[in-house]
Length: 240
Ligand code: NDP
Image: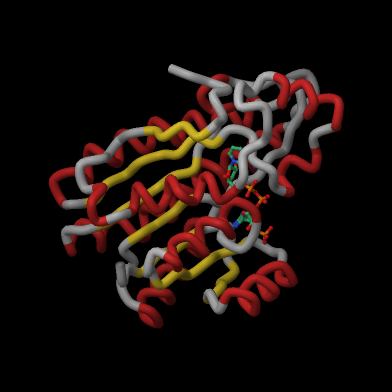
């Protein structure tokens, strides 16, 4: 493939699997992370993949990071907006801070990174942007008005960006994972997890690698005609 790829949140969980899968597909990958230096170092030592720390929710940090990466590695061809957080609480208990933080990282993070990468892709006539949404952005979830709003926003963002990039060889697609076994789920109580798994027709949680395969598919040279789509990878939990 020989393409330069940024995977945000690419050092742990789903992002780690995406970074590895893109590397296996021949891309030169730069994996970003938000603060867990120890995990990032271990990941980089294990895989040889370059890592960089910045806050995707911060507009200036995102612009500076992409400029740095382009100077050191070359123009960015593939952007995977994977970084995300949860700050769950029911509407009765959710604070303004919990609302703001999730919108800032999960939704504005995608805008900040696309803002930095899209113009170059458009000028060069080739680009692939994949935004990681969520089954809960499609169907909603108790305790996640912030997260569901951010992820639902990602799906609308993706379609609009796809329209703007289409004539310039830049595709934008979303993947909506179902429940995937990563640390993100560690805050969910076991009795709640049991109920969630019972609602998944395939009868288990997904694996990070199953999302990564979708990213490789959507970022391939041959995927030029796929844009504005949402690929649901959720074990049949939610179907349109
Ligand atoms: P993890 O919590 O395992 O990993 C999150 C990654 O995002 C980490 O690398 C983390 O960096 C990074 N990150 C968090 N905040 C920031 C920030 N402000 N700036 C830069 N990087 C940041 O999450 P998952 O792998 O489970 O989830 C990945 C994506 O998939 C998320 O967008 C999530 O919403 C989505 N998703 C996950 C599902 C699941 O069941 N796990 C289901 C549906 C969607 P650091 O290591 O430094 O903390």
